[in-house]
Image (cartoon, rainbow, N blue to C red; front, side):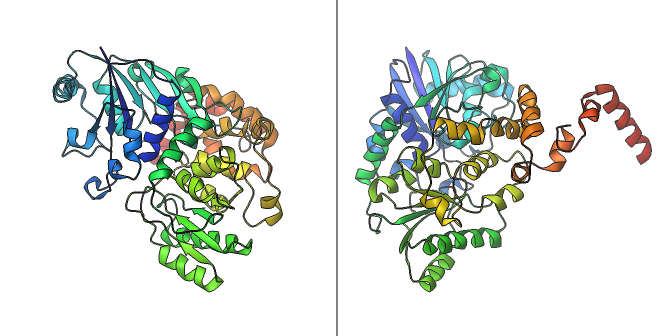
Length: 443
């Protein structure tokens, strides 16, 4: 018998898995287990996903719900992977406690390079793997090198079709076959969640502000970015704002946002964040007149799946401050900055047209491979020619914001190193001589 294990770290990922099951993306199985992983810094203090309103509607797609945190306690699931010598012991243990017997195990993982998903894949070594990307990071490179024993087992990459016509780069080094999820299937699932969600406390047509993940900026700059969202949205004439903090943590700036809203004479609502609900639930319940954000996947979901007006703010600051350069938030920020209108430009916001294959290809077709190579040159060395073509033809005052001069120089890419000297950094002998010279100088 085949048992399918679906690994999810939040309500949004569980909803994406439910939509994939409804769409027939997984074959028949004798048993389906939803494995929930809480990766917060203090997992015991986080609200459990299975306590969220509407989770019972999603649970019907699975035969059982298990907790990865309970399975590995007291180890932290966000930082632990098994030692190679311990893998057989862990597999025997989990097969016994989960009553798997000799079943063939197939896996559905969210991020195969992160600890929970990688740990599960290393323990259950025999079966096929499906990776699902529930956000914009799927359009970027894999965050780190994945062992071939995991990567070669990946059969498909499921992803919401947020950017029409654009192929995700995630797991491209293993030629994983991308399979887009229909917007209709996702909307049906989020509609089920919205039916069970508590009242938001805001009128239909209120503007929604999507706060970015905490910690991307220093605290003072983060608060200022949030205040700019309030000011810019109020300046466009919106009188009721709904603030949705990032699911990754509470927003300490909420009191300051309330004070600023009061000063501007607008109403501000912060939904109860006991168990964060997906932004799509707010779209279903409120049908917002405007959605504002910086690097949220939900911003593109609002534009592509719900046809809502959207605007960005603070992307320039984030592109400048994100460290290290390979920070996974860089791809979402780049996409939002290149595609969506600035909140400070009312004419651009009101005149925004729908996303089309042509507009997406023009804005991102060459840019994303170049940024992806600069982020992960060892994971995707095959993207170097595309990066060189883009930088040679399109590097200007506008596109420099997506790159760092030092990073381009270290990779011998156009824009810093003259074309006639580009061979220097690619020549292993010259690099070895340079290292020897630096060593002699230090001595």
